[in-house]
Amino acid sequence: MEDEKKEKILKVFLYFLAFSPFFLMPLENPDIFWHLSSGKHLLEKREFLTTEIFSWTLAGTPWRNFEWLTQVLYYLLYSLGGFSAIAAFKALIFSAAALIFRKTLSTAGAKSPVFFLPFLTVAVISVVDARADNLTLLGFAFLFDRIQLLAEKGSGMFSRFSARNIFLTALLFALWANLHAGFVYGIFLMLAYSVSLLTAGGGAAGKEKSRKLLFFSLTGAAAALANPLGWRLYSVILTHMRESGAYKADIAEWQSLSPLNAHQLPLFLLLSALLILAAAAYFRRKRTDWANLAPALVFFAAAAKHARLAPFFGITALLFAAKELERTFDGFEKRNPTTRLPENGLSEPEAGGNQNGGIIPPLPEDILLPPARDRGFIEWGKKAFLLFFFALPVFYYSLYLIPQFKRENFYRFRSEGLVSFLNANEKELSGLKLYNPYHCGGWLSFETGGKYRIFMDGRYLFSGLLAEFSSALRTPEAWNAFLKKYGIELAVIENLNQTFRQETGPGSPVLERPFYLNLFPEKDWALVYWDGKYLLFADRKKLGKERASAMEFEHFRANDFEAAEYAVKTGSLNPEKLKKEAEKYFRANPALAEGEKKIFRDWLENMKKAAEKPR
Image 1 (cartoon, rainbow, N blue to C red):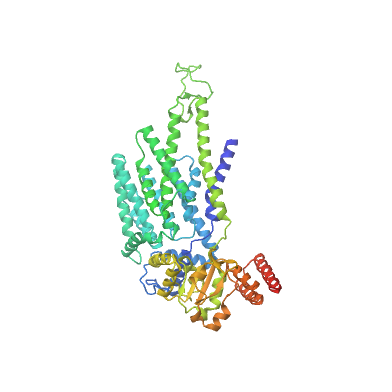
Image 2: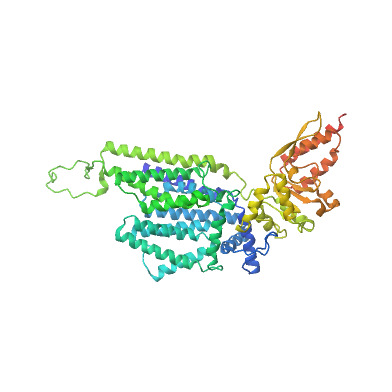
């Protein structure tokens, strides 16, 4: 009874460890906003978008929107409950995928499938966000479960060429193709298992299962054509694959896996465990479970190129690991001598009869046990093994995940102050050609109601602009050429804590000046808004002298307080002007913490006192 209680407590803790990140990880993926804009347009205009309408740089360019149904779903959720509803949906999708995987492990023979769920969470953690491909992960987990049913038990929706199974497969892939183009990973999974079952030495049964998977994978590929793009959906996927290199420099999920990355290191540990278990299986049984190992290795190769595919490796690899660990422990027990224990606890007489003259009936296999000494060794070995691997996710959670739980819940890169400023000054600013970083485009467009046409966002359409932007940042000269090429008149950039040193004259102090003065010279650009996250510059000529003077932060500006202090102390700046700009800053940032306001006001008071001192 005590052991059962401990086991229940352990299982509850494992479930908490596995599922809590799905609910506690903050929403950060900026792409959700252009999904929301598209979903809103589809529902309000009853129009399927075929051209780009949110930017001024690529307006009218053909856009093959292959995630339209997910966008409608997300916008409906947002309309019902805002970002909280989207976060809840995200958590439920990942939880459902984890529960399906738990069932898959049980189908494959794992006796304690819950033990592997925290490892699954670690494997998928890089994509635990509100994303269009959340539903692809769910579809992949479901498909993997159906494949394992076929491989292990010869049952499930791929076991017979029936009209029902063909219809269900077609329905699954038709729906999937309208939600996300990741259905191709499902087809690839089926093809990988079809090949591995054919070549893994399963005999006639293996060949038959392989043939069925091949048939149903082709059925799925054909059913995926039932989408608004038709066959062109496959063209979009090929374009994505061809241009994926353009995203690598700026978008982490398109980069290669690295063992130096905190949330990717466990994947390399999992790969190492996979290879060790495969080698041990070969030396122990003179064969390896290639039917499950080969797909896992193929998905690792894909993930090694693009980190966003890591969850698929995690799912396939953990199944192989679970099966091999069960075989390892079972095989160790079976290789030890056993003693038959009858119900009275005495050893069975060798004479074949009992003291009453009867014959002891055969005892069930589950009470054939190793000797006590070996049983103790096995149990301690299991505990040590489980403790070591159990400690890994706990260590990982405490090091990497728990700090993330403390972040701002919804899109910490957003700036409500900037959006409010843009909306309040729509008449003066919305007609200007706007530059914005790719991760800002979606929310700037959505939260200003489309009044401001953006420069770019995270869609594949803008891969060329993203690469050009990255090159332009290398030098001030390249940046200036970039601004002139596109005729930029309004620019949003991140407020980075970067400075350069500027001499003020012989015998005078050297000042730390903010980086943006090199990118946006004061004679041409006015800083009209700033906060802790972003800076907004406007072309002086487009604003006009009077408007620029009213909106500009000339002295009270980000990371330039040393220069303001020097100007006050040398008498070239009246502290009252500095105070007026500070009050304008406070009005533009109503969410500014009182503690920060106090720091600024204390500094302003010191500037006033410094100005009163005789020079």
